Length: 210
Image 1: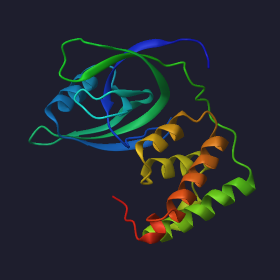
Image 2 (image 1 turned 90 degrees about the vertical axis):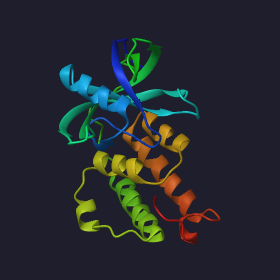
Image 3 (image 1 turned 60 degrees about the horizontal axis):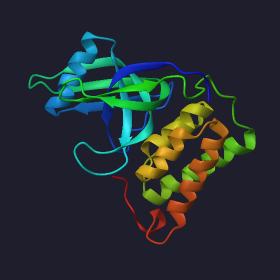
Image 4 (image 1 turned 30 degrees about the horizontal axis):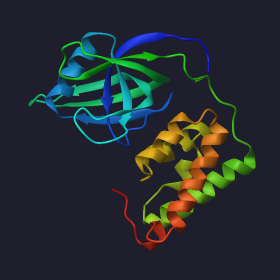
């Protein structure tokens, strides 16, 4: 952990909606409260905190960690919906939610809770293992993947892209988000792909990507 850097941001609870520093996340915004959130964010600091709900309900309980997304593209449709793209800046630790009278949720968060400086590259053997297991996992899911393009991704983009798009459960995705090091996240993503592929009823049994 590092020092403390508290700030207040609007938060968008979305199961499976992982965002990592230096990664991007496209979102289609249709609920009225989140349309308001995007409009207010665009008129303000242009950032939204992505965080996963840890349970059901409205409001749903939240995990304690998420990632700030800077809005780098926004298109408002004729009916008021938005298509936006977020660019991850840094992960945060939730301090407390604040009731400020907005239809969307806002919270005080600590932006210094994680070290999100650029990571050291993976070792050659670990990189090869990630690519090898990703191929097996993709084949088991019946996905059409441009593996040549995948091979051109840098280590961080590769590992985080798998974490974002693979059909892991919410708890597994949260563990990936909170993993301190890229090497540790790479090990975990390999374990999760192997487990899901080999488990009874898993990917090798015909599971499809939702």
